[in-house]
Structure formats: structure tokens, C-alpha cells
Image (tube, rainbow, N blue to C red):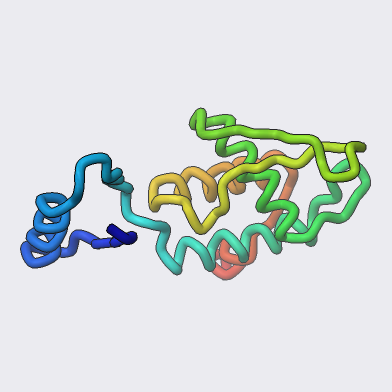
Length: 136
């Protein structure tokens, strides 16, 4: 059996998933996951990361939104007890966190990530673009 992904949207997709399970050979793995993050959540996350990147130097270094995302994903994994793996880098002079990509986050996990960014921003005086728009 190859890979199948069925998103449960109603009776038809539930029947399709049940049929696949009924036909699956012994030893087949079945995984259930929560709904993935939404595009508005993704847009909000990147806007917030950009605001943090522009306003907060991290230990004297200006980080990109991508780097901030990695820092916040690391904090999220520590908070929710997710997989946390650090391995030596290829040169052997540092380490790499093999954490989860933000594209793998569920809606709830993405909400928690955005809340972490808000909390951090509040603690570091970040003015988020969305907050400025609401105040106008």
C-alpha cells in the first residue's frame, strides 16, 4: 500500500477513510492529526516575525524573520513537550536543532506559537503592525 491522505470533511470522506482502513494490510500504520494551521494564521505569524525582526536585536545580532521562527518553534516545542532533538553540526563545532517545521503545526499549535510571539513582543516593547492598524 502506498501513502494516502484523507481529510475528514463529511460523510463521504469518512467512508473513504473507513474503506482504506478496512482494506489495509496488517502492519499498516494509521495516523490521525488535528487540522493543519490556516493561511490567515500563517500570514499573521510572518507579519509578527517581521515586526520582531525589525525591532529586537537578539544579543546584539539582528535576526531574520526565518531565524526568529526557529527560536519561537524551539520555545513552543519546549512548552508543549514535543520532539526535541539537537545533534552536532557537520563541522563538529556547533549544534543543530532538528525541530519541527511550522508547516507541520496544527491550528492549536499555531495559535500557541502566535501567543508566544505576542508574549515575547510585549516583554520586549514590540509594536506589531496589526496593533498599529487597530489603533488608527
